[in-house]
Image 1 (cartoon, rainbow, N blue to C red):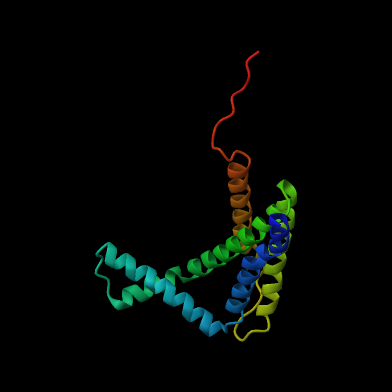
Image 2 (tube, helix red, strand yellow):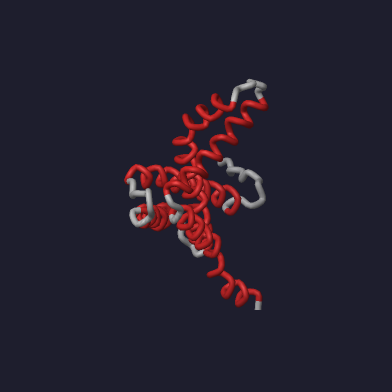
Length: 171
């Protein structure tokens, strides 16, 4: 009975990946104005928090300038983070289905980078947005990090679940 239940529930392991794809697609469907405002707001929160923590006493104009200067990096970090999470959400179920090693890297990588390309194409139809090969490259960095994290985590926990070191026999 337990094996039947696991067999029936296994396909649901891809649900987080589907939800992450929906989230990424939703962000890409925002107009350039809305997306830019969100990025600026996050950037402003970062510099405002830094200002408070370090007691810098910056004016509103100085904070606004600082926020504008980091906005590009905040956007690109968001790209990498989204695609790192997508790669994790795709790699875990593939690992559960027995895809390991180079095949996991290739399959999960192809799915994630393919989705990144599709997403950039999708942005070409959104007002004030456009496709960017550079963004696909940045997304690919996040994908690589996510896949490698899953590989490392699964290898370290599943191949040696007791956490004990194996002793070599001496001859």
